[in-house]
Image 1 (tube, rainbow, N blue to C red):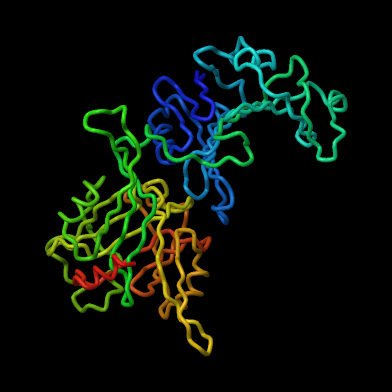
Image 2: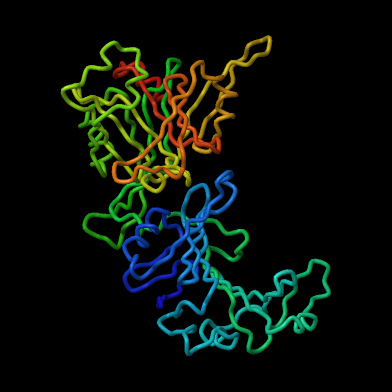
Length: 425
């Protein structure tokens, strides 16, 4: 049985690890994988058709804990303990829930101190006791008790005294004063672990197509030799098609991984007559997993030739390999009105394929069907995706109409005028 420390408005933790509010999804999964002998039977719950409408949940069924992640930024928003019989809980080092100590209203009052009277929810048959960043839900002993505490107010909720002996049914840890209105906080410093993260990624474009990326990067910087002064710093970095390896390394730092392409499954669709001729050396990717970006370099010139931006939607083959890249792609669309005005539009990580087609038009060619599988496991439970090419961009579309990734192709290194134009935007 897990023995966990409760820190209101911050975390639920063990001696060796903790789930902290604002933690990225990938880090929480990494903790679960590392301690898989202790924490078993984990479910990943999400909406297959509407993944942005419902929280993404990691359900620790053996331990009675749910971790609720914001559907958009994929950071930990709420920690719910829904079965207190499966876990030991303590606050400031003192247990308030074990096999020997029942989490009654008297025990909670003794451990956490005075608070406002409980709020009764008739629909759930529960009393809610709220502290800042922490809530307890108490189950009534029987349905017969409900009328005695039934409020007479029209809105159905009222501040009341919780009956003696009532025990906690659920506990919630969150940010702020209201569980219903809570949002995932910014990532805490403890979660950076020497990595850099992308707050947003803007695609730099001109009339001909993509030129490169502007990344707003978050890093846990600190003063010279003083870790106590550590704080989150934001820096901007621009990467262009035609940049060298050295340019990219100096701007973004070392990649998490360098991947050499052994085969190009898209080569068959190339019009080049030399597509069947094997190359003497392979192009290679810089994989920046925490930025959600891959950068492809030409094997001969060692210059950037492609960017891949990952959305990390659940239900995709590559889910949880990359952090979500929150990108924006500016478009200038010509209206069909008589005066033929131009309109500025932006495609984002959350745009759906039918919305993109309305702006860019329907592709002339049929999509390329992409079926990913590995040599170790040749089954892909998520099915195929479809790749559509438009305006030097390839959109990988999932079966639920969401975008799995966007691949950007560009001309060789832009001249100084093009760079100045991109910087001006």
